[in-house]
Length: 124
Length: 124
DNA sequence: ACCAAAATTAGTAATAATTCCTAATTTTTA
DNA sequence: TAAAAATTAGGAATTATTACTAATTTTGGT
Image (tube, rainbow over all chains, first blue to last red; front, side, top):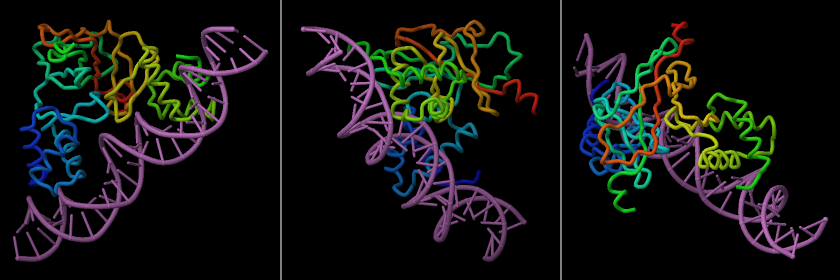
């Protein structure tokens, strides 16, 4: 992977804007820094960065994929009301593990918890 | 929810065709039975059925949502090679549970395991 | 059974998220 | 410092899904 200024901007922005943005949300922030970066470039680089493990792609939150600069193993909670995404630390969860395991070689797993966050609990 | 022949066909087909199909895959099978059922009707009914808990919507498998007629609590494994989706029974997994939990009211969670299935292990 | 109200439909248009394409530019290599 | 390889912008194309509308079907009361 060669250096590119655009990729650097994209990664920097994702790291600063640490709210698990979708590509569209991230595009807006990237666009402020560099108006010439195209969506094609954004998507291509997000996928490249995710493939090489520099960032993480999160599916299943809504219709769009979201991206996380935090690659240390952790899970996510999405609030059904406000749709905000929170990190759930691995240490706070009993890690799932398949007991009998002759069928599959499991390389990784994702957990997405859903419910109501503290802020939205107050509002009820 | 009123009765409709189309919804019945859709549900029957999903139950017969028990491979966690995407809407597109299911549409092909439904179309064989009744050529007049439109995609709008398919999507609307899949969402209605999922909302009322009769079927389950699975996100995060690929770009499309998949649907599962099996509503008893279980997880999924997706093979990175052949992209086939397998059921993982709840009893075969250490159930995750958040230890400290004053932040979130968790109503449900999904786990998606990824790796290589037995068939694809043989092919390597 | 009959009829109005409510629900559902087919078909198409519209939208959203993402990928693909191409010629131009940038980065690397040696 | 020039050729090769990688990357880019911008727009077209694709995929998955939802929205719209007029017609049809289902339902519940008589």
